[in-house]
Amino acid sequence: MNDDAPFQVLHEEDCPRWTGGRIVIYGYGNQGRAQALCLRDGGLPVVVALRPGSPSREPAAADGLTVIEPVEAAKAELLVWAVPDEAMTDAAKGLGTVRAGSSWLFLHGLAPRWGWIEPPETVDILLLAPQGPGAALRSAYASGAGLPAAIAVEHDASGKAHQRLLAYARAIGCARGGLFRTDLAEETVVDHFGEQAVLCGGVPALVRAAWETLVAAGYGPETAYIECLMQLKLLVDLMYKRGVEGMRRAVSPTALFGAREYGAAVIGPETRGRLTDLLKTLESGEFAASWRATSKAGWNDGELTTERDDTFEAAGRRVRRCLRWPGLERSAVEKGRGAG
Image 1 (tube, rainbow, N blue to C red):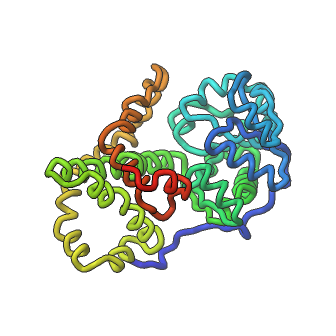
Image 2 (tube, rainbow, N blue to C red; image 1 turned 180 degrees about the vertical axis):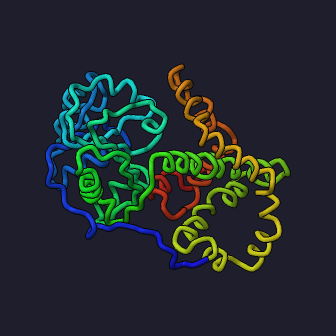
Image 3 (tube, one colour; image 1 turned 120 degrees about the vertical axis):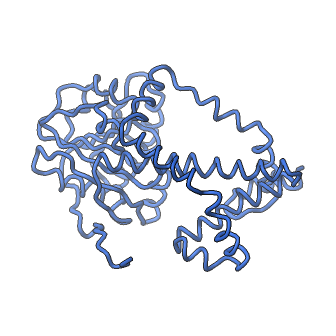
């Protein structure tokens, strides 16, 4: 494979500065707060739109931001949709008269991709998807760096869509990290596939299954937890910095031989077939429809949070209390020193 194959990335020097009018951040959660604070620190004309009674009103005001009613949000030059995907349909009903020639910017493609929200023809449809949570975006900005982001212009009604998108990406620091182009459909599928197959679904399931296999065979739960979960960060950090090949060059010959001989047996044809099935579910809209129906019926994450009290999580708490792992809060280590 050619390492020099084109992958077009834009950086800060490729992006204009924001010289337009007011920016409204609709929502003040994970991404909304982080982006609003970055805009505030950069001296841009940003306000936050929140529904009456929202618990985020007090924190936003405490952060020095002006809070407006949703009915005023659509008057902005740029409206950033930072409410949860499943809430966008109802949130859109609270808007006032939409300003023709303005821009609507989405941080994820799900809601506009599947018609949960339908922007008017008179506004730009933009996408800026930071490649990490809001805390990471904010931390990177504060340190003078930036979190990379995927960007797209799906509809240019104003003739200024590209300029506004790039200026906004620069204002929140993402252009420092790099901007790469995508579209709503691609971003929606790839983001969900990564979350479900690897990041939030596949890796935790594999870690837990490996731990359960060792414990069922009589091995110590703490030792198994350290090997299957705690050491994962060290290897992921290596892959993050050097790629998979670079990680493999850094491990022992024994580890490398074992990975070659048995890795494919764990992630074999059956797993690959299930990954293909998952991809089809995402591409067809089946997952989106299922999630929308579930959220409307009343989403309850209790099934996941019960894991906090089981033997797997209990072993993890003991490990984190007793060992000084890099990256853990010192106070947490000191409080639990010697605990069993």
